[in-house]
Amino acid sequence: MVGVGVGFSSFVAGWALRAGTATAFSRMGADLAVVPRGTLVNVTASLLTVQPTDETLAVDLATSLRAIAGVARVAPQRIVPVLVDGQPANVIAFDPAQDFTVLSWLSNCHPAPISQTDVIVGDRLPGQLGQKISLCGKPLGIYGKLGKTGVGPFDESYFLTFGGLTDLVAFCRGSGAKAGPPAGTARDDAELEHGGPNLCPTDLQPNRASAFLLQLSPGARIEQVKFVLAQLPDAKVVEGNTVLTSSRQALSSLVIGIALFTALQITALLILVSLLFSAIVQERYREVGLLRAMGARPNHVMAIILGEAAIITGLAGLAGLVFGAALLMAFARSLGFYFDLLGIPFSWPSPMVLELAGVLAVAASALLGVIGAFMPAWRVRRMAPHALIHTGSPAT
Picture 1 (cartoon, helix red, strand yellow):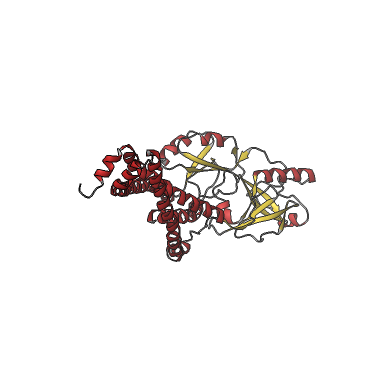
Picture 2: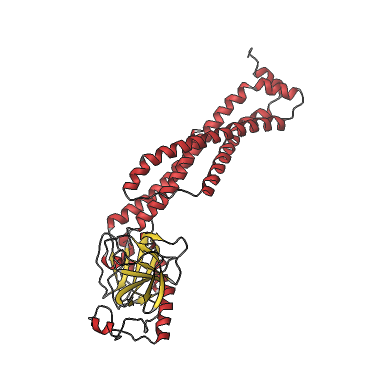
């Protein structure tokens, strides 16, 4: 009961913390960034993006970066100046499948995945969920809004998928929009108001990226990865906050340690159940001997012992679920409240996951009892009836 209760509550609490912790560590940004040599990068608390730039690298470079030992994830970004509701702004294109810096900062968004017709708004920009905005005359719906990151280029930008950026370029070319001056150059606001040169990306080169954000795998040494990246032509490497990188890698190692501890706990419970049923079976040698003398087969005796073990440990599993629910309530009202204050949100499992976890916990409890009682049952199965009767008699 105690084992199932602690295991069930640990699973549910771990599930709730996993999403929050993953979000918190994703918000730390990238460990490294690979950018063109002329790109300016302001190293802040989180390495989320780079300064607006016209310099780019080939998107195919991401394949080579993923092949480097120690690199776990690669997220390309493309920064493009555009007109948003008639005002100059920057759009950052990203790949939702590879991203680990943008979506983790969403504070309010649609439940469905982001599409090519959606745009995400930075914290310092106007706009609410569900509203429509115009990018170079193309209407797009606001998918969500980011929380405050403290990184200027991130909080003051709009975000599209790479597919959405491709559609925007095709729209600008089809509408005959004129390409404006490059990013970072001076623009006359009067020209913008009177239909002069604009910033619509009609001449955007495909398959280019402004930066590649890298996340290292647990145990990877950042110096070794930087040495390999330094060999890339026309690119430079920017290092993020090393303290945050070390913390994330240490947490990954801690998760592995917890898994090993859980395996050792299950092994200890298995040994305990085996010892308990060894004592129970030994006390019933006389009864088992009488059953055998009356015609019970060895397999029948073994089935009775294993069935009893399954019933006892299965009922203990049900009691453990009640005990685990009580532990979860205490956890939510104590440590859960503390984690919320630290900014680590809880994402409790769905009812379907909870039901499945409960069924698996009870089934695992019954299976643990069967495995633990198997050896005692096998030993008594091989003993002769007269030996069981004499061994279990009070005279002996």
